[in-house]
Amino acid sequence: MKRIILPIIFCIGLSTGACEKSAADLCGGERPERTLTWLKDKIDGLSSATECNSISRTTYKNQTVFVIANCDANVNSIPALFNCEGKHLTLTSEEYENLNFTGPIELIWKSN
Image (cartoon, rainbow, N blue to C red; front, side):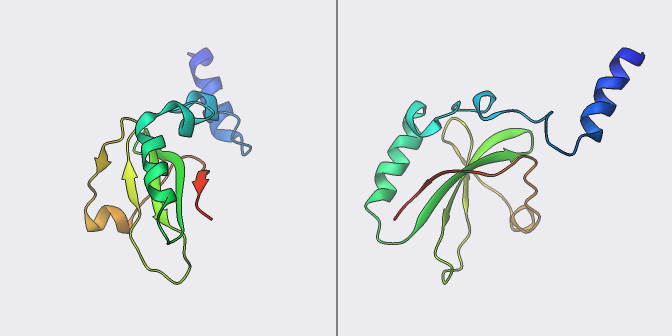
C-alpha cells in the first residue's frame, strides 16, 4: 500500500510540475505542427488571414486539445477547441465560462 501512496503524494506535493507530461508525451509530440496533417492544414489556412490568430496546445478534460484563438487584444472572440484527431469540440456556454485547462498552455503557432 505504501508503494502506491508515496508516488501519488510526491506528485501532488511537487510545485514544479515534474509529474506533468512533457511535450513529447502529448498528442503530436514535440512538433505537432509538423506531425499532425490536420493541424498543418489549419495553419496553412490561417496564414492567409488578415487578423492575428494563434494555436496553443494544452489539456482539457484529460485529453490534449488545440486552442485556436484570435490574438488581437481589441477583438472579443470565442476560441475553438480541437481534439488530437482534429475534431472540433462543441462546448456549451457554461463550459466556455468555466474552461479549466489542467496542463500548461504551449503556444504552437502565431500569425504575424
